[in-house]
Image 1 (spheres, rainbow, N blue to C red):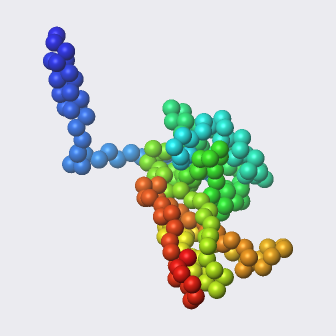
Image 2: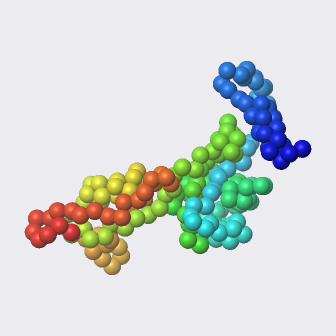
Image 3: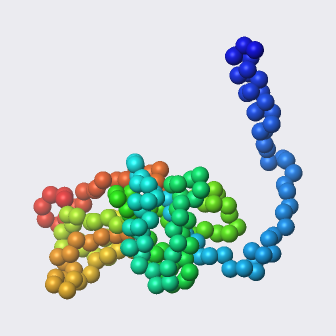
Length: 203
């Protein structure tokens, strides 16, 4: 058979057998009663975000050390998808503590975290945003306020929390404010902005 004919035959076969539309009948499957009766482990899914994410063997020990859970957690890569880590928690307080911190990284790679819903397959869980702390540098003390810090941080995207308070040695006016933001992974990040002040040029 001519190679061109073979390619055409394969293309036709796959297009014919793999055609799918919303008009096709929807299958009704019974709910797994065993799943309803048994407790599914508290599960977080983690996906590294970066140009060259480190392998699971480099991420897992760092997370176990950083999380320092009370009741323990099992972290394992999903089979055939090593960029997805499955984290099984034994206690609600531990999983809430990890979610509360929200911004995690390992060897330069930020980690996208999502709670798994048993109504979804693992492949359906979306990892479309990543959380990290940003610093608000160059704002004069006369413009420092929780509202202004929030407004500036919103240029990155959704603000989850701001960090601006007194330290043991200095009042907050001398502390570089920061904000925890959640940013879509497909959106370019704004590097900075100019702001007006009462005296002097914009900074």
